[in-house]
Amino acid sequence: MEDHFLSMNSRIALRVVCFGTLLLLVTISAGAQQSTPLITNIQGRDTISLNGSWQVIIDPYETGYYDYRFQPRGDGYFKNTKPKSPSDLVEYDFDSSPQLQVPGDWNSQDQRLLFYEGTLWYKKSFDYQKKDRKRLFVYFGAANYVADVYLNGEKLGRHEGGFTPFDFEITSLVKDKDNYLVVKVDNKRRRDAVPTLNTDWWNYGGLTREVRLVELPSLFVEDYFLQLGKGSLDEVQGFVKLNGASAGESLSIEIPEARLKQTVTTDSRGLAQVRFPAKLQLWTPENPKLYEVVISSARDSIRDRIGFRSIEAKGPDLLLNGKPIFLRGISIHEESPLRGGRAFSDDDARMLLGWAKELGCNFVRLAHYPHNENMVRLADQMGIMVWAEIPVYWTILWDNQETLKNAQNQLEELITRDRNRAAVILWSVANETPVSEPRNAFLKSLIDSARTLDPTRLITAANERHYADPSTQVVDDPLGQYLDVLGCNEYVGWYDGLPEKADGLTWKVTLNKPLVVSEFGADALYGKHGDKGQRWTEEYQKDVYEHQIAMLKKIPALRGMSPWILTDFRSPRRPLPGIQDFFNRKGLISSRGERKQAFFVLQKFYRELMNEGK
Ligand code: GCB
Image (cartoon, protein in one colour):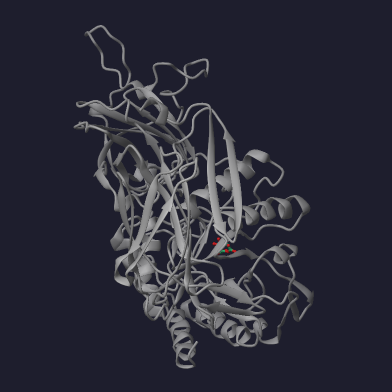
């Protein structure tokens, strides 16, 4: 299996998508070690969970990694060394160290770690019954932010980016007994990283999503992309990629309920193009129909539940399956208000999306980074359309090639993971980024990649707007020319004047494209009451929503909105004692699950829209 142990000096990832024309994107990422190609649909695989208690060592000085001359140590904590005799000096011991739960951020599990930004080592031991002709991978749902992964003292690789999955093949390293998997996770913020130093959310560190061992046959379905072709309502297009295969392997794609079966053959890269006519019940928010799809090769078979629908922008209209829609949305951070900390479980997803439904939403903006896969899968089942985004936020280093590569990689991992989900209609490449030539070029390059990786969905970004004169707001960010949908954040009534300022504003959108107001809002502490002119009260927040809704109704190109935000969330930028206490209080729901007055204002508006058939 040594030849499959792809990792060492460079990675060449081939992603080929056929939608009319054959597009070939070759990503060559240099770097000392890399993960193996991302495996799609881990949930559909035979896996062994490594979730649960892991031993941890807090290491703010990175003593487990560097020696006293600050050179990487050959005998770092990843060796899990034990003293061999009473005179041996070993200054750490995983087995008597404290434990943390995985999945889970470290900040919300130990009060001492609430503000911690640095390195923490995780260790999990396991036995494994090796199976003939099976390959074994270790899969991480996400680790924030840089993860260095070791098995039995050997380095598997490094992954950068806090919100996307990665995996490593461990077939040749795993033993029957006493394997030890060690992960160094470092969440120090860096100027050149994605996101950069400055954000408005908590920098939750650690193994924040699940960890699994994945058993696969020698030739296995690594990735697939099956959706209706762009603009089509009756043709499935895409590809299947067979890992370990060369030309001439036969694959079938079956949708049993629709009595459809298609056979295709791989090319020299193990890749098979797919295209077949299919009369299917289309996925809509009202009827989120998912079909069981079975992909089989001689030695592998995987099932998924996939919805089929089309999404297009035509002039200012958004068309779902050819029919105009309005996005009744809300923005959501990946935070579990009741438990505290990063959301990761099915229950978390059910709670957050359940609240969005209660509000009357058919759409959520999963801000400001890729949320966990459960969330997107549940949105698929519940009929909630999704805006998915990467953490290109505020002032990224636009001129830095490494930063761009990093953002590209996060985008590729997000799209690879989620492009079979009908719920996802929009990929967003950025949030509130300041206009400049280098920024435009950086984002244009991300937009191009997104289109290559997925030609079926619409591309957006949450941009800003400016004043042409004191009563005219203009949406004319130059990035708009490359986008399908114009996202725009504005805070009239909170950072920008008082609530009634909205009444006198006219909006101009220079391009003939759909506009989504991707943020507006105001902070309110649940239970704090007063005059509507008093900041931080529920009355003030409610007033902002009332004036905003009246203003938004008058924008002709408006095709959706995702106010900021469903629930209060932690942010180090929000220190005001007694009010914020390190929470951004723009939630319509408090950090204890209580609905604020503005919740009901938005709910009423969304009900009106629904009654109008929107
Ligand atoms: C924004 C950001 C969002 C912040 C929000 C706020 O424009 O996109 O991340 O949390 O404003 O509350 O200031």
